[in-house]
Image (cartoon, rainbow, N blue to C red; front, side):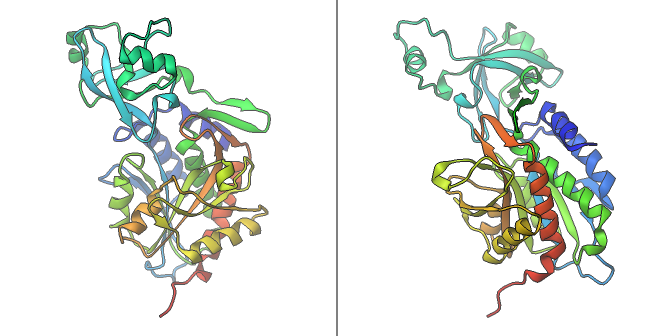
Length: 356
């Protein structure tokens, strides 16, 4: 499947943390085409492996991670009139969604709803009204209009803990000159890059000197639980996270095809040898990587490294405007990320642990 068509399919798939089934099914189908083995592990991760030559041992295996889940909402309370009070699922603010159509993922069926803050035509007599007028909307001001009663919702399996996602009505990608814009390019663009990288490796696997494990993880936005489970059980001592990277003046990053090589984030600094290897791989692939210290950021790889589960970690990111909003990436950004990752994985035998 062509990358742009795959990206569109992934964007249309709903995948809140802990309920990423639609995204998971697509990713398993695609990884199965290129990996020697592919399965869903007990944590809900999609796991596939492309093995190196017969002489290689499992110890230097590399894990490549991108996450399945998207930012979403979770029901806190169902009011008597059927209105849903919701909280963030993942790192989002109400501004991430705006007032919009939503899909309520009930146990029995998916229901339509509308995310609302209330009318702008208010006198400011309530705290909610004042927040709306000031443009300072918080999660306590947000609710979902369902036009069903509480008892009807209960029969359909809508309860505290039910996931609420942006409706498929608003998930279609939007072309802006040399860029693609859409909600949930985090992490659908990196998923597309990882699958493309798997395709490239499957065609030239003779260049691999170690096994490569592709791990498409659950619950990254909430807790990195999927990554922690997989890293503690799969072979290897190096993890590379594939992510979206913020385009901001404070980080010196720009919206282009050139991948961002993350040197550190809020959970720690990435391994120097891996950072150097990713930069060199990007240049070998014909790009000029953007090294950046992304302070307000985290990834599966930094979570695994900071927990002491891994020896080395790195993070390559697709430059992205409006992260956790209506995001935008360069049309060549996915290919650039995949090709850089391919060069790193096929040359990674030169990246060795520090000696003491």
